[in-house]
Length: 327
Image (tube, rainbow, N blue to C red; front, side, top):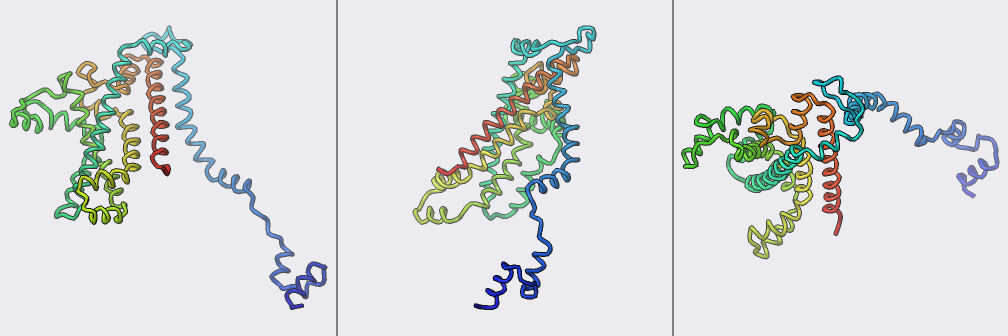
């Protein structure tokens, strides 16, 4: 029997510790306490508790209050009429033609601007992916609109670019023979103008995501396609586009959520006008709550927009999971 085997047998039989190695004796003298999940959970809760409390106060409680307001009739112009209204605000919303109009404008604005951002962002990313002189300067120029505040973008487009006779784009349209127009004052052109405005500011985000995705693509499929003499369109159609599908879905999700809650740029450019031509749901809720001072109905419109955004988030989340799951 070896020495180590003898020591282990002595330890099991309770013989004096002189035969037991010091390290083993120390381990037996002071047994280590096992960390349990409960200990870690308490420690994590201790660290994050203050932050969770602040988050609940500044985020969750206002949301709960907002939902509660939708069940009351609160009109500051008629304070004597304030009281519990049940689902009256929701039933009034469903029969309000202006609500359906603003919802339709929101859908057109969101779908069109997000589609343009994806197409233009991908085109810019592909064009600037190769080695070329001045590529970094061009990339910086493409990214510049994204760093501007939405209110500033709305004011710049209203005063410097689209003003009839004096705006830069209006001048170019006149030179090209299109003629001078009141782009933001014509009900038939205003929605298209704000869509272009939104696309101009947020295409850089799509460009940024697609540029990073292109840089991470594997080179082997492209080398094999070159050996097979595939054309540029075939490489894009059958290799680049399928590999970039997760990035495209990500851009669509993020930009759709942001477009649904757009407010600043449109308010600065048109204020929702002319009339209700560019009045998206967010602007309609603002007008009801702070111009008409009908807080209960304004809260109802806001909660409805929140529910629409949440539904779109869930839908796109499932779409992304389906795209990223292995076939």
